[in-house]
Figure: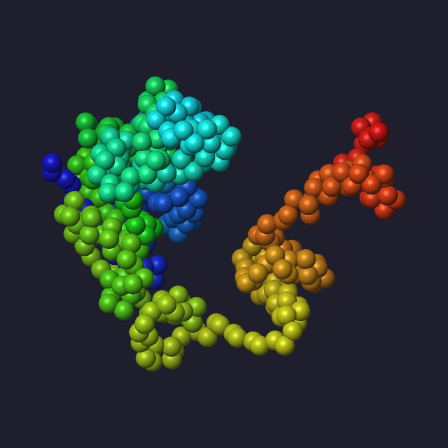
Amino acid sequence: METGSVHVLCGTLFSERTRRIDDLFCRTPRSCLIVPTESYAVYRTERLAMAYGLAGIWGERITSFQRFAENILGADFVAIGNAERLLVVRKALEKASPFLAKDVAEGVSYTGGIATHVLRVIEALKQAAVDPETFMERLQQRNNPSEWDNGVAAVYSAYQELLRQQGFYDRIGTLWAAAEICERSAPPYLTANDILLFDGFDDFTPSELRLIETIAVHVPSVVIGLNLDRSSEKEDLYRLPTRSLCELQNGLHATVEDLPETKARSLTEFSAQYLLCEGVPSGHTEDIERNITVTAYGLWFDELENTAREVKRLIVEENASPEEIAVVVADLSSVSGTLQAIFDMFGVPVVMDVSVPLAKTALGSFVLNVVTAAAQAWPKDVATDLFASPWFEPKNAIE
């Protein structure tokens, strides 16, 4: 099977990789840029629209890999989410119960979490491009079989059969179906492009690689930007993308171009490039911006207070937006209350990405007060908090 040209640009964030991909996209009206996630597709679209003054790039010209596969399938397919997939797995467990060991089959009826575990196994198998028939063949070759083997294989087969009967596609099944369509013919969505561009990927799963191999025969050119530095001192950091590069070379005979990193302009860029590397070039930091400051504090409270003071200075004196400032804490949950109080004292808005126990929420506290009041004959302090809560309504008063 002949393919169009496949070219891989290897480079990190600090190379010319992204700029080269952007230039190709802007110079080719009939092009599509595929990136790892939907949120990154939105970011890339906004950045290109502002940097290049492009109009008409909204829509499907910049899209995630998953959405790209869905566009190949067209409007007739039905994708299902995690909740629907769990329901299908539960149904598959019921159908496969004769193949499960007796104690396992009995456990299925009362262990709700088993469906979640089986779904993870199925997702891992599909991500590795292992279909139910191949999975069964490999199980038969195992030297130390498990009592779960036949049962999991039966559940996997039943799961796939239920999806086919209903015409449903799960996330990875979408990639499989798109690859099967491309193996049979050229989808209109692909033939509308002169070049397909992939960028922002660290590596590709077997299912994603299979789809790339099948689409390469239908477009004149495929260019893949891979986050990879093949220099010897960084080989340990890039094992996954190196493996993907080898598979692209073996499967598609891709040509490869290495893009070196540009010289760091600041200490933050230098740290990102060399902090985890064995070798650091000497004299590389002599003429770069010194934008890292290390300060030692005797008390953690002083550290939090001075951090809030510096954030306030950036906002007031340097006109920085609060959304542009990030504060990273080793254990945020242990200081979140104090940090919130300090930032409130300085009048700085803050949003913290920290898990809040249910008992600490307004609704959780209200429920606990209801239980406590009922169990302890309405102690005065609990009753006062309960009656003052916005969740308490006299018409629903507890008797």
